[in-house]
Length: 345
Ligand SMILES: Cc1cc2nc3c(=O)[nH]c(=O)nc-3n(C[C@H](O)[C@H](O)[C@H](O)COP(=O)(O)OP(=O)(O)OC[C@H]3O[C@@H](n4cnc5c(N)ncnc54)[C@H](O)[C@@H]3O)c2cc1C
Image 1 (tube, rainbow, N blue to C red):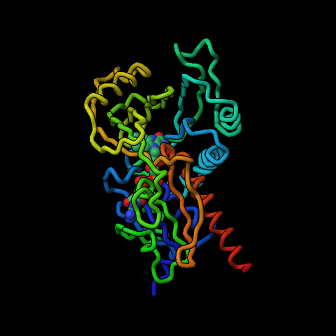
Image 2 (image 1 turned 180 degrees about the vertical axis):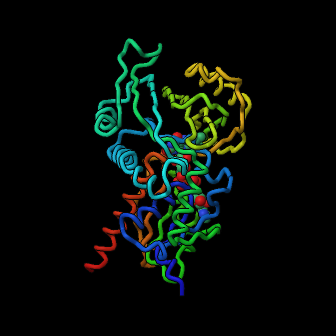
């Protein structure tokens, strides 16, 4: 009998893939004991699969609760080793410079945390800030070419021995295969509807982005307002693709894209970075995605299903790439703690 069902990760978005990676890397679980089960896999497209639609970079929009600050810091400072394992920057994860502007000061807790780990951090003097901006920083960030990065993490895991099973589950208990000891629930927005979880605190925060061809732009620029987000993100090793965004629409479940929203994104991003228009704007794609948000924040918790361990790890909202590695690490630490407790009983 195959051993690959001892540890099951439900979900092949960035949260599930980071979690499978942490099982191998942190808990030293043999990849041959791990299965990833998911309805959608890297390469698939669906409004119920958020990860391919992300911007995606590391930015400072995340909340300032202690857990999120820790997840961000862990991810930012540990991605280097994951990048090396999957084959280096050409696998769709690389460093680039970024500038971030806030209309409202993000607060001491956030700023002190950022100061403790961001590389090349500069706080922009007030007199250099654009009109209406209360606070600004420059630093070296991580950029992700999301669909490609996902595919490359999957390839790395698969080559190491992890089994991928494409299947929709109607109940989380269906994840327990014959020899399964632990299931990780990394279902993202699916946590709202899958039986056995049906978390009513989960809700979508819809976004829309444009993918444009821009060989002349090699840096990020972001502006955060009270009710808007404008961002420009170069996709590393993507043949010069640039992401322009975006929107933060709570409780909007639509996967449709809107021409009016695209025009608004172009207006805001070209005001923020006029040099985008140094070349004619060449739009390659327009996409919408549903960030898996959750009232009360990320859920990393354990419970038992028919005497077996279930670890929840979902609710990454707009920060699965930039905080998800830290979330995966925490979820795997929780598993190790629970297993230790069980051994003592
Ligand atoms: C426009 C936009 C911009 C973004 N920009 C950024 C950014 O710059 N930086 C950043 O860090 N984050 C960004 N995000 C957020 C990021 O995309 C999400 O946090 C992340 O993708 C969530 O990943 P996930 O793995 O939790 O969920 P998903 O990617 O949705 O994966 C869920 C997985 O669970 C599976 N699943 C669900 N239900 C079931 C079921 N019943 N049976 C079987 N399988 C199931 C799905 O098939 C899928 O494989 C952005 C998001 C959007 C929409």
